[in-house]
Amino acid sequence: MSNKILVIGETREGSLRNVTFEAIAAAKKIKSDGEIVGVLCGDENLENQAQEMIYYGADRVIAVSHEKLKTYTSEGYGQAILAVINDESPDGIVMGHTSIGKDLTPKLASKLNTGLVSDAVEIEKVAEKVQFTRPIYSGKAFEKKIITSGITFVTIRPNNIPMLERDESRSGDISTKNVDVADIRTIIKEVIRKASEGVDLSEANVIIAGGRGVKSDEGFKPLYELAEVLGGAVGASRGACDAEYCDYSLQIGQTGKVVTPDLYIAVGISGAIQHLAGMSNSKVIVAINKDPEANIFNVADYGIVGDLFEIIPLLIEEIKKI
Ligand code: FAD
Image (tube, rainbow, N blue to C red; front, top):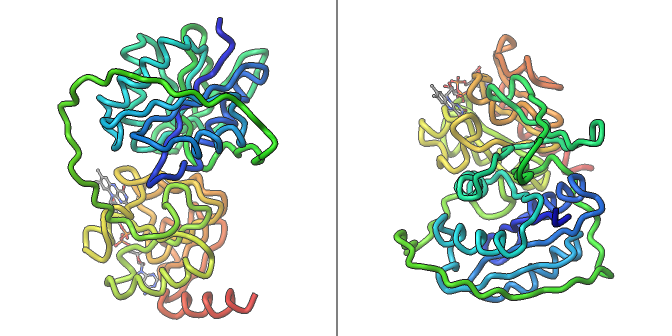
């Protein structure tokens, strides 16, 4: 037993994603007396991000820099992180259940010949064992898992495990590891981001999601305005994406993003089971729909029955007064 947990950090456009800090907090829950070792991959300049990981609770950070790691590929990152895992022999590995986490961790688990608990939303100690809670059947039920042998390998759903407080007085070693990354068969030539600027949907604390009831891309404008006054992000149902009112990168649900914000406002969304799969674990759900029988009201904490085109401007006006 090495008594250490590896936390795989994730960056986007030079900044660490919040789920990295949540993963550090998760690692502490798994092994409160263990060493938390962060690992970061990139082509260069990982110092600042490594330092941030230490401020948020990592004891030391290993940065793997290589020109082939500039953009994520499962081949490149897989090789680099596997080399770190082989050096460190951690008891556990934690990463965010993000698009990258979902792609990378099963591959690593299979290389390590170990299991993987994916999409954990809660971690607790039960009779001296670490128990993970994860949603199943599109969020309709939860299962609890205990790992009895091998590496404790887990991905955590963003926005569920609170990060530790940032502490600038913390210090820790930041080391660089040179890895000989073999040829990567996939070459990423360009990354074109379709999502709008601003708050990242999967990490947003407030989401205003529009459905087919919004009726047009023009109809989405008041939703963006509401998101701005609330400091949130705009999401959508597949109905709205299929109707070309917005881009598919905004889709929330079974085949879209899974989100758990503090506040989810569903606007003109009927509440199909596939949509609920992506948002029903939000902390507070507000539904705005002109149909009082709409299924979305069955999961909503607060419901407003009425025309969204009248209600949203009123909400914006009132919130601006606060
Ligand atoms: P609708 O069902 O058409 O609902 C529109 C709502 O707007 C209605 O309730 C209506 O009363 C209300 N409304 C209309 N006008 C107004 C107004 N002026 N004011 C207020 N309310 C108004 N869907 C997802 O969202 N995400 C997924 O990931 C997803 N994955 C899927 C995967 C599969 C395999 C399949 C088969 C389906 C999937 N779907 C998904 C589609 C899903 O089944 C629904 O078709 C979709 O969610 C419906 O979108 P909607 O609620 O916006 O549209």
